[in-house]
Amino acid sequence: MERTVPKTESDQIELYSRTYYSLLRSTGEIAIDALVETHTNMDSLLHVHAADPFPDVAAFSYTTLRFPSCIIHTRLVVLGQRSTVFESHGFPVTEWQPVAARARRRRARFDGVETLGLYIASRSDIDDIIPSLTAYQIEWNKLHASLAHAQYHRKLAEWPDDHELTAEQCREIADILSLTPEAFKQLCGVWGDQVVPSLRCIAERPKRFALQLLAGSLVDYQKATRHWWLNIRSETPHLSYAERRVYFVSSNSHSIVNLWTGHALRQKEALLDYNDQHHLLTEAEQREAENSLYYLLNKYEQSEQGPGDGPRLDAEQSVGVQRVTSVNSFELDAQIIEISKLRPDWLDPRLQVPGYEQLYNSDALIINVDYPLGMAAYDILTRVAENVGELCGVYILGKAATLNARVGDIMIPAVVHDEHSKNTYLFNNAFEAADVSRYLMFTTVLDNQKAVTVTGTFLQNARYMGVFYREGYTDIEMEAGPYLSAVYELIRPKRHPYNEIVSLHPVKFDVGIIHYASDKPLSDGNNLGSKSLSLTGVEPTYAASVAILKRIISHEIAHVQQRSSALVT
Image (cartoon, one colour):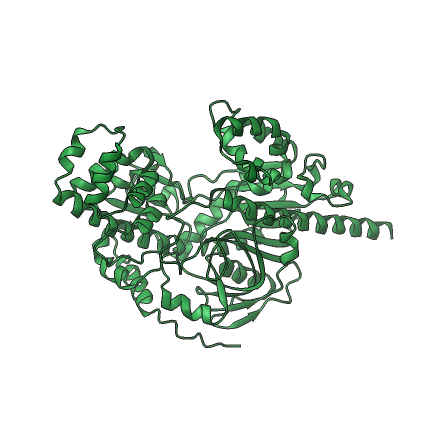
């Protein structure tokens, strides 16, 4: 059934993306300068003040957090899928320094001078990186113009890198940059211990990024995904995936395994003592006992008095959890969980389900991946499905923007419009509000929602989102559409269609999607650059993870019981 997509007034967005993809056909470097005008005209919800003369601190903070700190020294950004791709083009990235962003999982290497190599998994990475680079350059140059005009670079040159700005110096710099003290404080928080080096670099020169795409064909991305899977196979040689039943989960690297091991709960006394010493959580925040302990666990392990992650990893291995870190390709770690090795006395108490003893006879695995960006989701699920014996369920937990809820609220969609395929998918979501709300104290759950999968975080504007909002779409994210396109191909003998209303109701296995709101894009630049979710994101993350694991456990118990009954008969 073909559908007519309503006019979304997204001509400027389409012009922008067409512009940078046409430029990327070049085999050499392209200048980000060539994209500034179309980027500004797009009126992105993440860059609402792009055309204004004063700095857009929210946009600059957002982009700064999504690049390694060496971005202040970077001139050339090089994109490739695997180390061999970089090296075949004369960029020996394996010899370069590994670097990482604070708010974006992407493998990166810096040559120590001016070249940053970023590993990409799909065209969605391009749709993320290019607008972010462009926004960063625009806002950098606004700051540069102010500091250079005031000749402040001379004073900055006198300060050592670790110089701590006085209150008076902060007020002076904020005034020069036409920022409020609060806005400048936010910038300093984003820069961390690089405040003076960042200001010095900004004052000394304008930013003129260049970009080079080394390989961008569909085959290149498929090769990268194949290498990702082969790495999992090589790290878990004792598992015969082709003979195993598998529950696929796309979430994060901590909540599923933390609930499975219950390690934080067994460290309760040490974690509360650590909190008493450092005052990380108030008494009110500690009332949500289980989730607060999970929040404290990582901070405690990495602290000076903490034990490191050794005891936690040992606990994971003893209950069948094996972590697999991706190497030499895009960054997407996985955790493989052998269900038969669970310890009921270790499980988070919220996972109590009658019949645990049945699971010792299970041959099923849980494959949990750190949720991929955009179109990489399609390739990942397709690759997993074609290499395992039986796919028993697909469960997706991720962040989303919301047009009608609060930050931290949970949205459970039953309809997903995918801007990649232009399809609108109708499906039976395995979850409803009651499955999650019972584990929440402060968060609202909205089920029967309509989600739209966008092509990039910057590739949205108020007019574009307004059309979807008027049609009832309030959940905006980046992975559900590609995952559902892969699900379609798991039940149909052809590639997913284009621009159709697609029913996935015939799917025989579980499909569950849960999103929690991370930002409100229609609130004038209120995004993850303007504030951090912190503890606000812990409650919905763990409540959704409990719902996912509890459903997997219940389904697997029922399967083992049915199999045992069949054998007896």
